[in-house]
Length: 185
Image 1 (cartoon, rainbow, N blue to C red):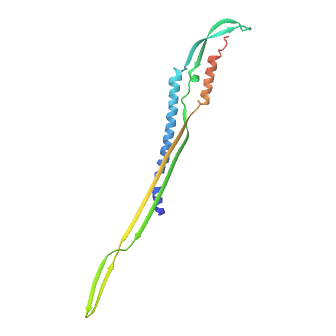
Image 2 (image 1 turned 180 degrees about the vertical axis):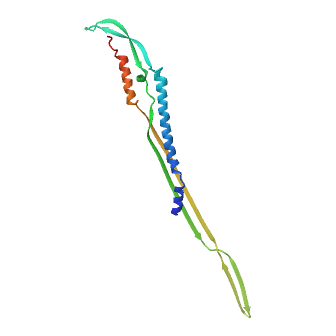
Image 3 (image 1 turned 180 degrees about the horizontal axis):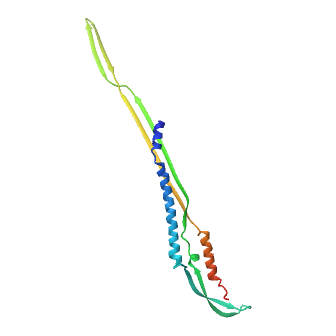
């Protein structure tokens, strides 16, 4: 196998584009996912600079120390939407770029000589006669084949992520502020 041929095939490959292109696409996808999450937060969970809350009333049964029903009290609940919905935050957890190249080169050469020429001569003298016949043949044949195969695969794995720690603390704070009222002074 001709090592120069294989080297020229490999050197002709635009590896910076074959590896850099998918890598750049993964980075752009991550940026898009982050922007989409920011849009979600600002358009769904926060309005006019305030956290959107789901508010509802519910009735709570009041019992005394003996467990006797003393009626019911209407209560209000306010839950920050940030804490009530699943956050559509994803990130690329794993990116794999596989490239496989197989170069096969086969060369077959066969040579045979085949050309035909015939000569016939006869000589005679008296009762003696001689006859000569000659034949020459020549044939030439040459075969060459090259087979190049390439396989290029890109695998990207994404995973839904939990909200960032700082946002989780804000969600916890808002949830506590809505469910544990501050005593008036």
